[in-house]
Image (tube, rainbow, N blue to C red):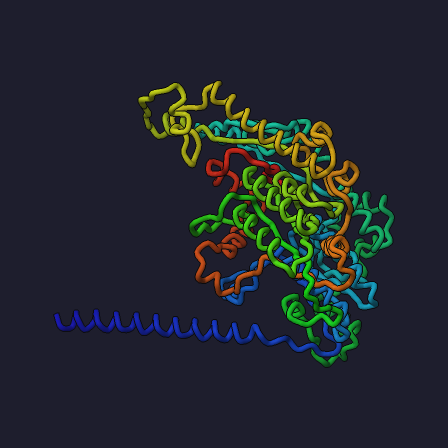
Amino acid sequence: MKDFIKNVFSSALGFFLALGVMLLAGIIFMVGAVASSGSKPTVKDGSVLLISLNGAMQEQVQDNPLSSIMGGGDGLGLSDVLEAIRKAKHIDKIKGIYLDGGSLAAEPASLQEVRKALADFRESGKFIVAYADNYMQGSYYLASVADKVALNPSGMVFWKGLCSMQMFYKDALEKLGVNVQVFKVGTFKSAVEPFIRTGMSEPNREQVTSYLNSVWNNFVADVSESRHIPAEQLQALADEFQGFREAGELVENRLVDTLVYIDGAKALLKSQAGVKEKDKLNLLSVADVCQLDDPKAKSSKNKVAVYYAFGDIVDEAPNSINPAQGANIVGQKVVKDMQQLEDDKDVKAVVLRINSGGGSAYASEQMWHAIKKLDAKKPVIISMGGLAASGGYYMSCAGQYIFAEPTTITGSIGIFGMIPDVSGLLRNKAGLKFDNVKTNKMADFDANMSGYGTMSRPFSEEEGALLQNEVERGYALFLSRVAEGRRKTSQQVDSIGQGRVWTGEQALGIGLVDKLGTLDDAIAYAAQKAKLGKDYQAASYPEAEPWYMNLLNEKKSGYYDSQLRQALGDLYEPYMMVRTIGRQDFVQARLPYTMNIH
């Protein structure tokens, strides 16, 4: 007995000692990380900015020193990349940019904005060198702006054109005994199609064909200009699929400049940067350069607030850990933040940077009101990112001027509602039975619903009519908001609405946006509208929490989301849609769920 107690005690003591050591090590790590985060990186003459074209690009990411330990990163932040390129242009000791890798996943408009920043960087007389073992198409689009595009001798360039693959769930759901009850307005509102069809409708095929061609033509035109290859030749090369061509043919066709291994790429970089072959090349990451001071930056009390709103539009923040929860635009928080910007005397104008395919129609309406209220006091200018469609456009039309990239996906002015009928699954598959007593005909209308859909029976014809009327009222309100913001009639908006998706280039022609331009263009215009001249400073909002707050805040799950995205790839969006369909607000202003372009 004594030996047993002794063993238990020693085991417990060992456990708590090990736990204490781990906690102490964690505290030391956190203190060290916080301390090191305050020190700026060393910039030697001949330094080069390294931009990794791997992983996924998001509008913003939060710096987290723990990500590498946990086995992954948080992705590449568009805002950080643009900031680093701008600073690298102004810092004399940074001689050029090295684009490394070729598997970056990003929205076309994000790629286009980075490419414009790289082209502007080249105008300073500094160099850009790109190298990859293989270039996927989006990464090649970026790399093609470089002075030298290098490829591994065994490498490939996937120049092939664009495709949008859509997945349909109707038959699979029917096998489970699930029927999705759909209520919508908009001929082109195709978000519901995967649940009620087994293939694309003709209107949907028409709009996808239209916006894909618009995006692709922009890609071809940009690559044609930088690589000095006629557009017709680039189209022909895409038709022949360059992915499995001999590397030598890629050089002959001028898609790449040289074939080298990684050591050859490093030698090329040293030569361009003026670094001796025996000396070490000083590569600075995007995060490194973002910590440096911009010698051209001006300090001012006059702030142009750049407010980032990206992700799904929801009414309120999730209340628990969700390992598959991506970024959200939380209606309640945005309304509160708009009020704070209105009250901040230093903020003279606001640029609302939107990257969203929409979500809750209710939250979109509340944010529209808050943005209009802010705009009555200070100019609110919209900068559209990769997506600013449906609920994202609902927010946008509250601003007084809208900038978009030519390849931004926007429009999708339409409303729908979907509620799964799982009664077949529960009755026929699970063997559950339902019965009730009610005082009035529709007393069980909402009692029949749960977070997963209708439980005991599908909606009656009368109930369905009520839901359809609710959707039509939402669409009428959406039309009126756009009509007011774009100085059109509701009938005019309806003619270009109906849920149809447009690119920024197309939206300019039909009056849904005012100008094609970058985030920097929007900031400059906001300063002009506020009559600030050159006496202003751009400031990002809302302020990011310190990285270590992620350890304390249970609502943060970006790490898990990034890992799930990497694991599922193109299946991520369908998975999230099926997972949450029954828990979404009934009335949705949202793009098709699987807006994949690759």
